[in-house]
Length: 495
Image (cartoon, rainbow, N blue to C red; front, side, top):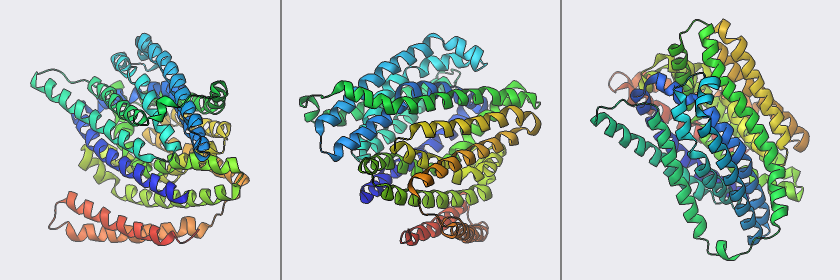
């Protein structure tokens, strides 16, 4: 099981890193093509997308992954195919409902909820992605349950390539035709990317000849199983998405109360969520891949009653997430400003990256520990914790931003993740009594990060006199990253 988790995590991480690298260049291209204001409008529609996806897809995908893992451990093909087909039908039906709702009420949502009528066109295009996304998500969940991470990795990478390529082509055509470029091109990119991802996932499924020959069994029981796991996760995500939508509305409103104009407020939101946050989320490619692989494995251990194994898994996850988080915090804090200027020509983005650096350990912990809890069937617990996180962030957005400006929002994001990761860890310790050591988990990674940063800064200073700053920065990052990777490999002999 351990080797399968490591192999799957590696495959998903490699795909995720390539996807994020492409995504960075894509965001640089977008920021220069549609501007900070366009990025702000583009980011404002995502909570609506998240709400629909939460309602129709996320919970069912996790349920498909979990129950596929259970049937896969028994080598029960009929059970696996029943789970997949049932999940696909239910998810696609729900996604059609949510897609129709967004398309039909796009004007009202844009005007009365997002407080900007320009979002209406973007929402109509976005509604097309939801049914298509339900197909690729359920199939990805099925293959993750079978510990075949390659399917999810290939579909993820292809989706990003098609998305970026299609937007680039559309933008070039519009420029050559002297047409005004709007944020709508970025949303069309999402549509084309989802279509490509769904098609490749269907090719994988259809290549399994037994998919068409093996009959479904206990369909009613399977529907009950899927809903028993999916509805609390979906409810969790729906409420969190509603709160995220409120965040998208209240951040610009609170910024206006702090003295910014409407366009300034939307531009700041675009810089914060469309430029700074992607940098902070980049390393989460590894932890998110780990989360995806852990859920079905924990589900198997839980079915066997092997809580000792869950405790060992939790200990390793916490150690790795904190170590990676501390390393990333140090580098984002030290190099945040030059990163913002080099990549986006925006000192504000750099300042936000440096400030957001402190959330890294808690951000990475939240996702992976939540995945373990979901694998144990404690979906209601993760729901309550996520609710607490969103409530904390929303309180800071409403009350702190008018007084403290953008800093109030950044502190709120940090406080929310601290609360959620702390609650996750508390519950898991009660359930599995995982091993924890302050020196191994915190002090040693801080020490290694400090050495790594020192060597990185020294190298950067030494090379800056005869090499371009970008090359110097890359070499410094590589040197520091190599030292930390070496430490992680040596430390693997620990827990």
